[in-house]
Length: 147
Image (tube, rainbow, N blue to C red):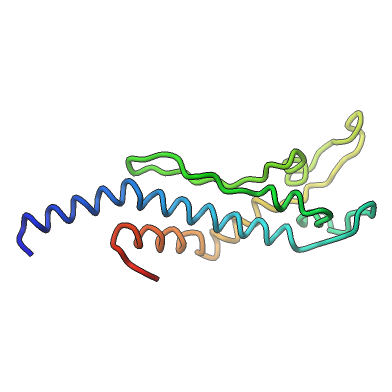
């Protein structure tokens, strides 16, 4: 390949890396987070109007599935080499379940933390899965690789 063609191809790869490659990596990583969080939220179940059987410190039990369904991935934002993917629950009670705290009328009920987002993300990081899915998505776009 002549030098001018090589330089042009390297420039195109750089543009794909800064634009769609980074966006694809951020999207893939956010989707992996969404799957991991939803899996955490599928660990325990119980029927309506019964006490929550999940132990404190464990993810909340599924009653209706609303919290699990509320976990959504946003389209990555950014550009020019910096992309941010995000995934989060949208249910109004999602934060109190994750972090615990006072709730109910007059805030007289203390709900223990039942984390599900932070542990799911930490497991993805620790296992290397988060980086792997990002790298694969990036390589598909930038280098045209499959795998």
